[in-house]
Amino acid sequence: MPRLIVYILFNLIFSNLVFAADKNSNYTCRWDNKNKIPCIEVISLTPNSSNFSKSGINKTIITKKQIEESGAVDLIDVLESVPDINITQSGPKGQQASMFMRGTGSNHTLVMINGIPINDQSTTQGLHDFGVDFIQTVQQIEIYPGSSATHFGTNAIGGAVNIILTGDYKDTFFVTTDNSANYELSGNKTYVYDESSLNIKVGSVKNSTVSARGNSKDEKDALENYSTNINYEKFLNENLRIYKTTYIRQTKAEYDNSNSNQIGYEGDNKMGSIQFGLENLTETKKNNYKFYYNIYDREYDELGTIDTYKSEVFGFKYDLSKIINSKLSYGLGSEYKYDWGYFNNRGSYTASTKGHSDNLAIHGNLGWNIFENSNISLFGRSDVHKQTKRNNTYKVNLEQKFNKFNLGFSYMNGLRNPTLYEMFGTDNFGYSGNKDLNPEKSNTYEIYSKISFNENLNLSLRAFRANIQNNIEYLNNKYQNDSDNIDLNQSGFSNQVNLKFKNSNINFFSSFLSSEKENGADQLRRPEKNYGINFSKIINSNFFGNLNLNLKYNHYGKHFDTHSSNFSTIEMDSTDLVDLKISKKLNNGDFFIKITNALNESYQRPHGYNHEGRIFKFGINY
Image 1 (cartoon, rainbow, N blue to C red):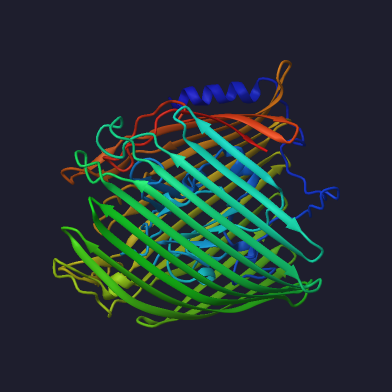
Image 2 (tube, rainbow, N blue to C red):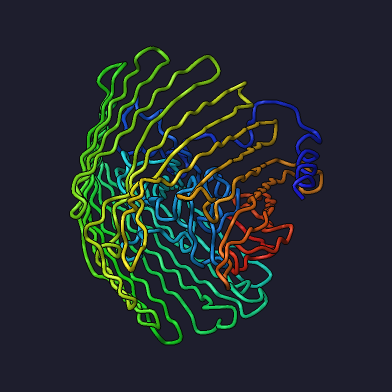
């Protein structure tokens, strides 16, 4: 099947194309004076960075334009085409999903909204459920592969994902449906005044296609999602502004208890976040103060038995970034975070926790342009946690730029503090929390390069080697730090090739990964190889005029998994998934047809959980 895909792509690509500057697909920022729409691009400054230290930060940005072109519905649709990321979801959209970044655990990725951590503190291991997040109100997504503790703190051993909700000034209305009457709706309205703006976004998704377990044609597990995002900003003068973001999301999804026990199970996942900030920006200095409050309220109905999960987080962040001269920059900052969490399982397995913790951090960085094309970046952060006390993290980056390529090297370490359940939880099998746990820690070495052959062709390469120490394990009815001095090891290589033609863009990506347990065996659900293609092309048709084609192909490699019934270790076959979208612009509307899983691949990931087959969708983005 991959050979067939490659053959089709090459026929599409080289049918009538020559190398040229791409003037059609590149976004150009221009003022729209008629509608008073400011020309604004979202440029998010990474915490604990400054002008000459930011070049060594591994950061991938997925813009609003790219999200719209891909036809993505949820966060998983966006992230699955990023090298170094593997995702498993326990059924169709809305079901629980875990992400393994660079082969680390599902609780080793920090998730943020506008730079604010949102990992739910009422989960047993502090992992984020990617299955409940949808992109109708999202403006941009940033991915930070690799340990990012010096920038974001705990949980970012594998990396971090930052969801940007601000910066959208274009009024839009979007609707799509399919042959099963499922739909996606979203609306965006912005009111611009002399010194302020108010942006309101709403979104809704309904989906019901297959059964999560058993035969895929059994009763369909339905999903309903609602989200609202309100952004306000006011400029007090040309350098000083205040801003506020409010985000509310509810996801209700049916799920199955087993192959034969499928009726009467539903999860109701509510989440809210409020952020308030003050920013002072000049040519040489940026000060940013931000207060935030997050809340989760989750309930799971299992045949009338209700399991409840609740958590609250409030905190404060301060970041300073300053340019000293043409060679030096530095940054300073601090962050305080208070976590409270509670949950109670009331079924045949009973477990509960209730507790709190806090963390105070200070951080700083120095960027030195030592020679004209040579940068040295130093980062440091010190976290003082209520239970684990003081833990320090560091990062060093060296980068040399040559005529057509750069070469860089990084060392960084990271940590994950124990969760509230690991410290304070109980269950009916005799487990009692362990307040003496130490944080998990990691070390990562990276080497990278980007080669620009010309304005139409560039290549990015990155290799890493990492290990995790003091990993927290469940042994003898207790969570304990592993004491055998054997690390969990990860290593890998990823690359991307970007090509521009006259009316098309092509992005080839691949990643090769080794993630080992302490005994040297492969970690489950981490394929050794993934690769794919993102392809966009303007097709000139005499009958329809210009049509925009977007094609996404993902190969998810063979890997080991746990059998859903007998719990043995089994090998899972690879999957080849193709999504195709064709759109036509008429006046202010983009009309489109999209086919997801165009090859109608039948697969389970993880084992025992069904995924959607081929689906035809059509809609308009006005």
